[in-house]
Length: 76
Image (cartoon, one colour):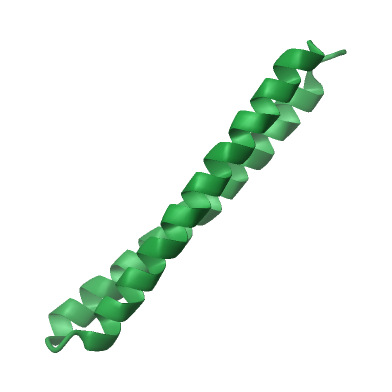
């Protein structure tokens, strides 16, 4: 059981790291898009994407916490 727990923790960490890295890159791109956009509609769309990215990144962190809680609830 300890080996399975270790594998789950490792892969959860990899997933969170990957999502965090992609989320950070997407955030920077959306922020630059917002800064250089000329049309008000483009600025509004960039703000929406920034919100989606932030919400998604928080969701990944919450999913990681849920996985830890579920794994820790299994008896040794």
